[in-house]
Image (cartoon, rainbow, N blue to C red; front, side, top):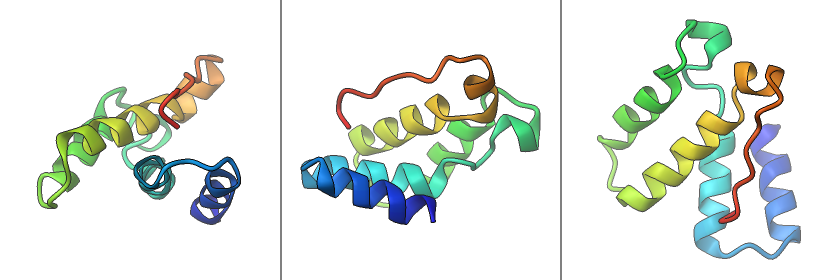
Length: 88
């Protein structure tokens, strides 16, 4: 559901294909290693990087997805610190 909604919004906003891919991957991976599951502030980024180390993704894409995962976590949202992502 998150992926479908995120991609729909991204398409309606006219994002580039690269940005659309970032949105889609961020939506799919947004809860990986989230603080509410792990108690760790860094697990999400670490797990996303670990996953991408087995894929043929560019470092630019990996870091963009990591920023999404880091920016939409449970703890971040509770603190009111959700960041904006100008590339999206």
